[in-house]
Figure 1 (cartoon, helix red, strand yellow):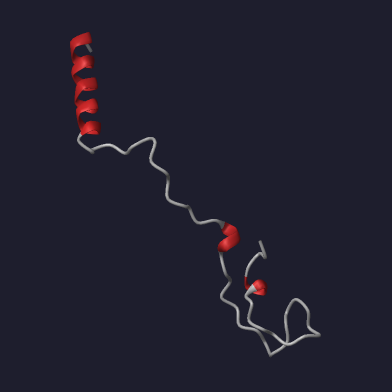
Figure 2: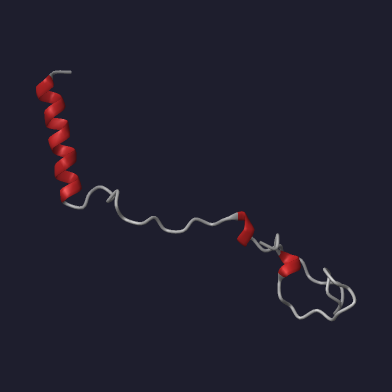
Length: 68
């Protein structure tokens, strides 16, 4: 590959990025899902709290997640 060909490729890439064809490296990234936000598809056996069986379940969801 010659220097002229490399320069042409670089010009094309710069032209695309100035026209909005490439992502902006300074733009914030969207939040990615994290394992601590996952909720298990479990149904409580009765109306007692799974974490603290001496109290009634108030459906907080803590037992369905990792609790983070």
